[in-house]
Length: 118
Length: 394
Image 1 (cartoon, chains in turn cyan, brown):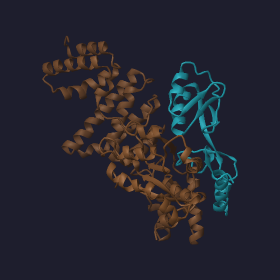
Image 2 (cartoon, each protein chain N blue to C red):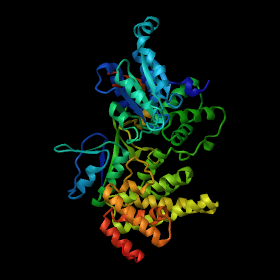
Image 3 (cartoon, helix red, strand yellow):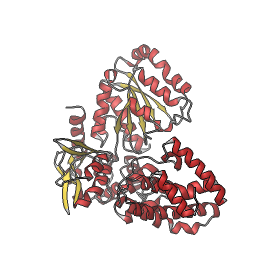
């Protein structure tokens, strides 16, 4: 079984020939296809429905998110909350930032930059 | 003072999670008068910051929020009365509040308005928003794509999602710091795990803990889920124990889960017919059990129903059934779209009911519905099946 990591809302290519399954894949609510760019998945539900089809081709997609504070990539499968989290967001926090002393101030600063653009 | 109130965010930078949704809300409030849509609709589960974001954004951008809760104000007349005077009073308002304080109309729990049952409430909201005299923000937990079609067309739809446990830790860390609590990291982790993405629930849990409560005794994260969240969770799970645990924790939704799965199994375009048949057989069995439990008080069935129901869900998920967000009504007629076919079917039912000495409805729901769905509404095949099964020439 091949495992591939993707981010919600970012285009990716499926390294398999989908053949007849292509129709079923693009019919999933939350999965979009743009010729030349590839597929994008909107959320966890779309991803789990997509995995139900791709598993037949020996491929599983796993979600990856970005840390709101430091911008690092965070692997959902290595998170201590992987069993209880719904994993349907693009932005979360990395372990270092979550448990740092000044997480609240850092978080406020990053939200100010992102939402109010400065 | 209640901590959820005490720590209600005063600015959007204090609202944790849903960054993209907050950004879209700010963009709308900055340019609502030239926005392509009439308003903005925030939807998502409880306790994820929808209302908090509206008040915090209003505070940041200089708006005065006029909140109408759709659970209390339902008729067109009452909504018009509450909001109608706003445009006239705008100049006076600006005089008293200063030029920066502009009105923002906020309809909370708009999913409580039913376009058929409430006397024009939803139309009134749409009409008010279409005039574009002030920004209109609506919030909802669950939006039915059919019932609220007009609302979805006129409003910009922004989804708020449950917070991740690590985001919950940030919410809790702020309170721990400001209250000067000595709570260990393990306790915060336990709360984050149990709050199921609901910041309000997490804050209440922290409050109980600070009052000497035991974190182990806090709520089971799977209990009392809203039906749409339960369906989303079980339909996206591929673990049988997880599905069973969710179903066992929510007995109030067993019937809805069963009927929803009846619908999605019957309509799945990818499921093979022999698999569909075996699943519908178990659906029928569970339906009988629930019926007997309710009518004849045979409560010992409660022991078996979660096992069978979770098996149906697990297998249906595995075999490609997809939940599309709708809770269907248990009406077989909806699947028969062609009028000529419906009339022919009516005649057939009359005939079969007469010959089999059975009520039309009982025959329709109990026997023919699953059979017709199996034949995907191909009437000729259905005729053949009826002839073969009942030994009748119809």
